[in-house]
Length: 217
Image 1: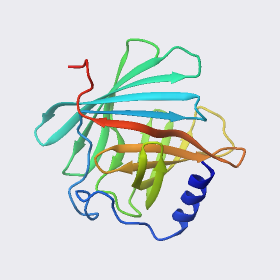
Image 2: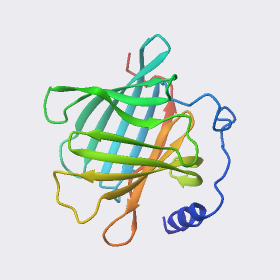
Image 3: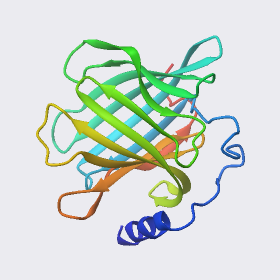
Image 4: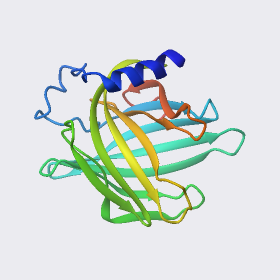
């Protein structure tokens, strides 16, 4: 883990690398909105959290692909929680948005009006965007690319720096997070520096499988 953190810091200060996957191409090529089916397993917070994501394609609206992502989240010894959310991509403006989400603590389904902007494609260095979820505001900016080694393998990923301001939670400063995206897989990791000055993974990809998981329709 120490070597990975050092590599991230050094690479972040260096010239950003090119894409690993041939179908990713240059910044102006066809975007990579992962349409599934796919299963991804994450761990984070020093092994305290375990997340299993199952991505399933949904019927598209015209040329707008849609997916459903079911997340089963296990935090230490607390009961596992499941959240089902839907996302779509509009190739006309490059926006990936979240349309709906269930609650982890009940049967309520939230519909975002307007849809909640997650990121914009194709990624390019310096691209930025704003989004707001209730009282929480996020400013995102694409830093570039880094080579990243995780339990699932070594990837070249786009890095998106997110500055999150929580209006309902008293904080001395906004939270800064770094999201890592890979063509065809989408988000593979999220991390940031904590109050102790150390780098912590809030989420890192342990394994992934492309295709419908056994026992699912």
